[in-house]
Image 1 (cartoon, rainbow, N blue to C red):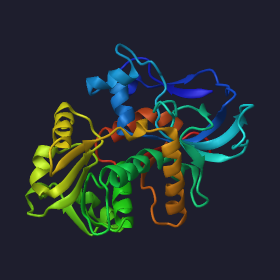
Image 2 (cartoon, rainbow, N blue to C red; image 1 turned 30 degrees about the horizontal axis):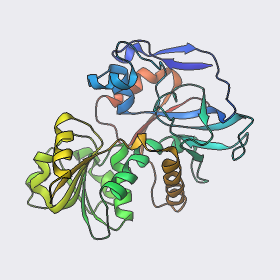
Image 3 (cartoon, helix red, strand yellow; image 1 turned 120 degrees about the vertical axis):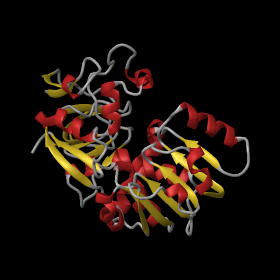
Image 4 (cartoon, rainbow, N blue to C red; image 1 turned 180 degrees about the vertical axis):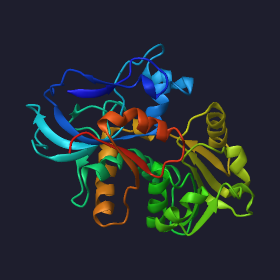
Length: 325
């Protein structure tokens, strides 16, 4: 089978299209023919080992797993002999357990892993663009932020993969949503349900005089210290981007009252929890309450180009790569 392989850290040019052995499913696994996947900032960070802490997950000196890819959509081609709940021909979307491996024509996944049947109203390309953003935004807002109807919520990075889902989900939960993005993306964020939008190139959202119950910094471009003045007395600052400063602030605010900083690795949650959330997201997608935003689509041979585009930091929603027509 063909796969996008990287055997050393570096620029997008380290990515190579190679023929590798096609995997075979174990007794409790399914073999999935991948039709579509995505390129995310996580993939780019793992490929470049930037920040350096990424090597704790990918390998200190060289990649342990030479195939990247955090999400996919495809068709089950074979099942292990102990698999009962899934069958050959099922169309599924999934997040690999180790956060890697989706950039290949085939992948084996645990039948009890973070996967679900594709919503009836989605293509493979659309379904591939769900797991990373939506499975991050949902638990952050619901579990970490304790979002409630009437809350004032600000989404920083509202036009990105996590941000576009966060805007839609916050709106669904009944919050008053303010999205922060660049000038080019203001209309997009409004179309997703934001009540207000702030152009970060023209205005600093921490200096508007407004306060928010939740500030969800989906891109890690701010900090709890910078946002503290824009939080209500019991406000919560959320970020999926880990740093030493934010980690210290999270630990400190966890033992003090008032405003809090929370970071979390939602991708490390148990597969059972992610499966429950995929069921919730499927219902919302089929009811046309939320949808993925796809910026650009690339062919298998264009992975390096897709990485270069994602690294510009200007993508809207998701960048999809198609493996099979």
